[in-house]
Image (cartoon, rainbow, N blue to C red; front, side, top):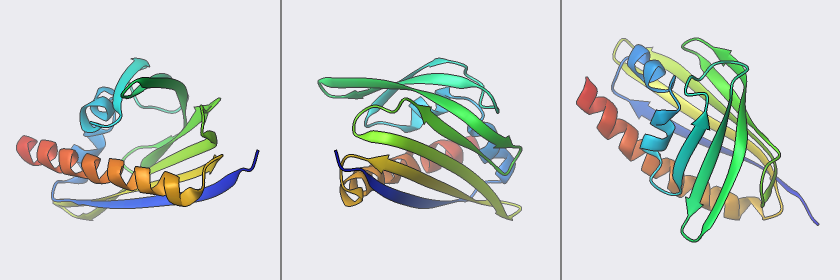
Length: 148
C-alpha cells in the first residue's frame, strides 16, 4: 500500500493573553469542547503534560474509531506535542505540535503543525484538517472571548 507524507499548518490569532490560552489547553476536556466534527470523547488522563496518554474516540457518523495519544513533549506556555500510538486508517504516523506565542500582553498566536503519513493523498487529508481547524478556531475564539 502506498504511503503519502504530509504536513498541515494552521495559525490562530487570539485576542487573549497567553496565560488564558495555555490554561485552556491544559485539560483534555477542552479538546472535546472545541471539536464539533468529528465528535470526540476522551478517556484517560485529563491533564496535558509530558508522559501522559489519553484515548480519543472519534465519531464520524456511523464510523467510530479511537486511538491513544501520547504527550511526547511539553514546555510551559510554549507548547506540547502529541503522537498517536498505533494510528488507525488512513494514518500510519501522526505527530501534532501545539505552539503558543505571546504577540503582546493581550494577544496570542497559536500554531498547530501536524506531520503525518497516510494511505490517502495529503491534499485529501489537509482538506479535512482545514475544515476541522477552522471550526475549532471559531469555537476557541467564542469560548475564550466569553471568558475574558
